[in-house]
Every structure is written in C-alpha cells, then in structure tokens.
Image: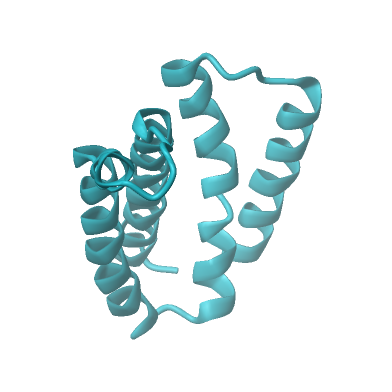
Length: 117
C-alpha cells in the first residue's frame, strides 16, 4: 500500500473515531422526555449534527480511497478504529481501559501489520 493511500485510510479511521466521540457527547446531552419537542431538540444537538456531517465527509473520503485500495486491505486498516476509540474514550470520557482492551488492541495492530505488508 502506497504511503498516500495508507495516510488517507488512516485519516478515515481518525475521523470516524472523532465522530464516535461526538456521538458519545450527543448521547450525554440527549434528554428523553417522552415524545416531545424538547426530546427532539436535545437529540438534535450540535454534537450529533457535527458527528453526522463528519461521517458524511468521511464516507466520501472512504469511497475515494476504495477507488484504488483493495477493500480487503483498506478494511483491515479500518480495524484500527477499534484501537483508537477506546483510547480516546479513556482520555475524554474517563472510560476504563482493561487488560483485555490492550490485548485485543495488540492483536488488531498485529493483524493490520500483517495485512498491509
């Protein structure tokens, strides 16, 4: 995989991880009060809208990447999302990191290395 395409694929991974943080933030802002306008307004928070826009932009970039990079390789790199999201969730939301998270992440990174080479 050429460096340019690897970097664009990694950019997709990072943007999706940021999108997940925006969705988590939106989930914390959502106040469910039955079927009311207040519920809808809190659901359609700026964080949710930003996450959706970011996902739309990332989808376009992803399709662009797939024009050149085989899906089998690109999707393997995409698995790094499962490494980045727990780390960022720990940093921003103080979610716990366990030994299993680290072991699973190490396996994912090893798999990505094997697949990309």
